[in-house]
Length: 153
Image 1 (tube, rainbow, N blue to C red):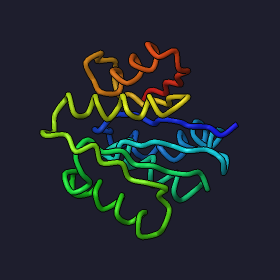
Image 2: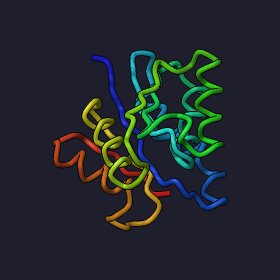
Image 3: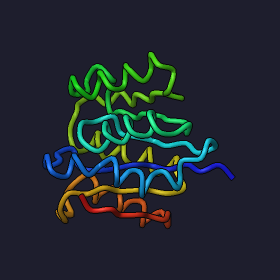
Image 4: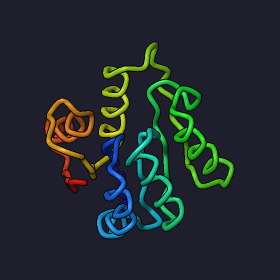
């Protein structure tokens, strides 16, 4: 059975944690990244972009980036990573949800879309603020009775 995995995580990552991400991704993403797997990533700065880079470089899994508005509305560095992997032919798809305005409700809609299309959620939260988008996504996945793996960063 093919795996469908949503990745969620902090947009702001401390520099010391950023250096640890390749090891964390190797430990917690690689076991789920067989060639039949599909990963849904949010396309924002932070964990989204770092996980996209790692998965595209280290696996053959299908990768779909989901953005709340359009790729052009993403932060410049995040948009460049998405476009680079598109040009390299590593993205299976880019889903632009075309929200009217970029804000919490648009990010929550994006996160719900990813969870709704996944069977499993891997979260990389920074901190325990229940109002964060990462914890919103984890809690939404719990409401949907989807398994969750939480890896604090």
